[in-house]
Amino acid sequence: MIGKKIGTGRTAEVFEWSDNQVIKLFYPSVSLEEAQREYEVQCLLQEEVPFCAEVYGLLKVEDRIGILYEKVHGESLSSMIFKNPDQIMRYAQIMADTHKSLHSIDFSRLPSLKEALDHIIRHSAHLEERTKEMILEVLFALPDGEAICHMDFHPENIYLSGEGVTVLDWMTAAKGHPLADVARTEMILKYAVIPGVPEDLKDQMRVARQELIRGYHETYFPEGLSDEDAGLLKSFETVLLAARLSENLPAVEVSEIEKELLRQLEETMS
Image (cartoon, rainbow, N blue to C red; front, side, top):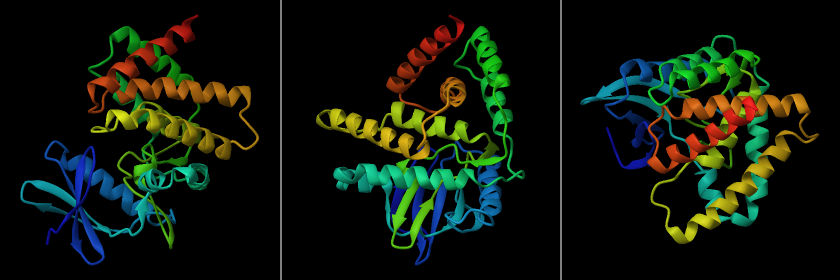
């Protein structure tokens, strides 16, 4: 039975269900197909990924679709960063090490990331046809891969407890090149807008994010990036910025992403 709400996200709310289970209830705007995809992907991944929460079933509660998950203990990385800002480099290292561990796992049964991005770009209502052509040209030139890519790997989806790390929200998981997933994480940390942040905390949050990105990047690439990989990371970011516009974003974030996307495309053409 539905209990106390314990989380709110872009696509769903999370409620207590029993002592060791929670239910992720999707908003009505999320289709049954999307919810089933997350459930099926989660079932596949829990066989291979050590830091996945267990999934128990797909069900309907009134007019909303839900997935029953193992109740994860501990705190989100974002909460811990907020409470212990002096430990941000340690949290950045945990984040990068976990991400790198995930990328060491090849898993061909997941859908293709490049195919998913191709579909999003082609059907985007936010891009002009000429811009779509330019983005798809960049996408086609990028390498593919079979590493597990989470594609929503950020501090709010990473939980720490005495038992270790658990990563949540695998709705967008796909197989692809690890640098695509790294680019997505760094893009979210750079541009994502968190609603309701007081003005006096925005500068503090911006500095914290910069530190988190620096620590994450330096840990993930301890020897630095080759010129080739730096170019790939930048190209993946360009494509992902374009795809991000199809998400339900605050207007201020849309504006920032559009400006950065235009800047990157002009740089590519010059």
